[in-house]
Image (cartoon, rainbow, N blue to C red; front, top):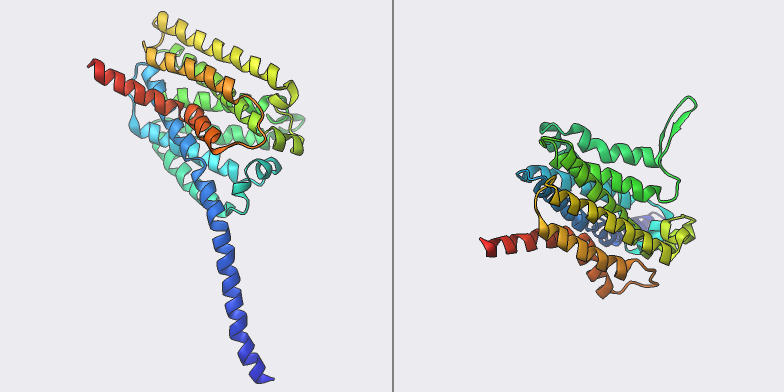
Length: 308
């Protein structure tokens, strides 16, 4: 009896550690996928802040762009770590990821970014994404007054556009002499981000429908939603063009031209439902949408270098 116990105990310990190792290794790849899934959007966001500086004819502050990128990374990584039903349908590669790891990494990135912005007098801007995120998902209730942003058709797209538009314009426009330039930049990026989030809703139609989520493409249908996106795109660039011609913002034809052309192309190509997104389509979408600000900054640097 005693002999059997002595023999089985090491076996049980080995099995326990094998199970623990399997559990850790099984969650490692999804966790890495989760942690790297927001890198491109955060880098793109940091460059959007740089572009906002350029449009307002203000010397770009690298450390503020970096801080903004870290906060964007933290917010998006935290959002993707949530176990939403539609996320499991739309992003199966994240299933099994360690939410605890994502939370820790997000918290560290946010604290670093918020500390940098706070020391530069931007504490309200630093916490803006978290405040609006809380109002969107949880809301606040005081007596009979209940403020919750979630629920209306297109509300998610509007909240994302308004929040990040204000975030970008607020960081770059802290030292602006007037409010006109930051407001124009806010409208431009706000409308652009409404377009981008709606395009991503197109590829998530299946998951959103399964989860009962009424997004703009689900409710309006592909054709009407696409016309809406083209209309917003034309309006945003008309405002930008008029502001450049009247001298309200800096003369940046490369930003205007590239943004206008690439926007038309990705609305035409990606504002549609697909059963299964190929790697080729994914690469093109990431380059055209998430990589737009990178392309603008790179193209502008090259052309300015050739002119100089």
